[in-house]
Image 1 (cartoon, helix red, strand yellow):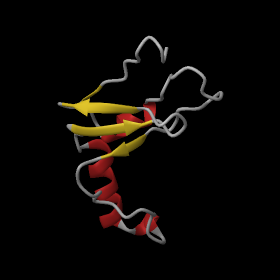
Image 2 (cartoon, rainbow, N blue to C red):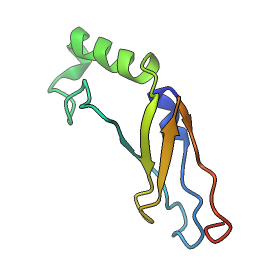
Image 3 (cartoon, rainbow, N blue to C red):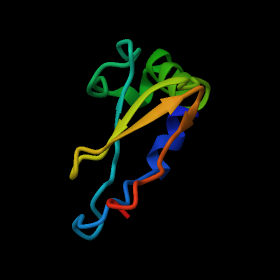
Length: 91
């Protein structure tokens, strides 16, 4: 799964507020290559923009977890595929 793809996914656990379950928090087994906040004047920082491009469009997430911000439900990522299936009680 490309890191950018995670921006298209949301949790559909029953009982969430309208628009809830988005954005999913991503938890990786290693630290991110990017700072937590954009650097000042990032528009002109070519090195920063190249790193963002690389991380968003070229990095494959093979293992990790996506977590719903509202319900706390965790969706495992295995071999690059997020398992977003819900149990019958959750659907």
